[in-house]
Length: 289
Ligand code: COA
Ligand code: NAP
Image: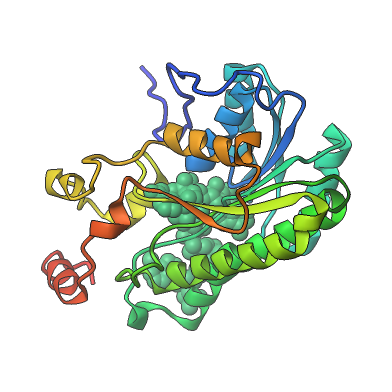
């Protein structure tokens, strides 16, 4: 019997509506990184609220497969578009495709990112640059294109998916933390300059979220009961919860909310261990550093 490969994205089995099911009727979202993980589920939750979506990243096969899964589960349209957030030309083409398919882009979710665990001494110049370019430059590039092509004249909401790595200088995360910090600063600049055009710009910062590539890469098998009990709410977050959080941010319930960061991590960043000496010892023991 053939088994589904584990990387096939799955929709929520039993989605429970918190907001009105028609909340985003007639709207369109452009979601980078929407073919996988947290952003796949953000697309799903939006579509369950009657939004159509465009999901973009580098791997077209994955995007096609995910778009089909999302449309089947929600009955809404999802258009997959190949795009590298580091290449302005590919972003302009993707934005043109979105506008010719739907005629509008109400929400931009900047979720594309790259990350891995590494001490600063283990980062080549190119490794640091690569993560900065995907996360920080990528967020700038896509926001500028979507604002100039559509939101400048019609308003909208931009949600940048960041993290809490930078709040306390998380060990082994100098590259991603620096990039996310840049995005959080950029968010304020964009909120200030684009507010008069009816554009809100926000960050949503997840903590550890179950069943994601981010956690697979960053946990390296270190998620045990002790780790989970160290989180104030005593559990990790779910992709569904991230979808609902971003749904709130784009909704009219958040009309006064712009230029700031909504941390959605169950209090993890406040209590998460951040000791380089101990981390180094642990990883040397496991021959991981
Ligand atoms: N530790 C240290 N350096 C690493 C690394 C690791 N685990 N993984 C990659 N690098 C370095 C590479 O060696 C390379 O540097 P070099 O040219 O000096 O050797 C540099 O990073 C770029 O790697 P490359 O594979 O060429 O980049 P890419 O653009 O193809 O991919 C990554 C970007 C590396 C971030 C890749 O892991 C990726 O595509 N990630 C997307 C998914 C993801 O990260 N999800 C989690 C989101 S939180
Ligand atoms: P993920 O599934 O690996 O998502 C990353 C996405 O980015 C992938 O779909 C990838 O698709 C896309 N991408 C990477 N480089 C790209 C590029 N150059 N151009 C366009 N797209 C690119 O990881 P995730 O764990 O769900 O993370 C999603 C977001 O949440 C990220 O911003 C991450 O930093 C943030 N976050 C996650 C956690 C967590 O617990 N998982 C915690 C805090 C923050 P392709 O490979 O097809 O390009």
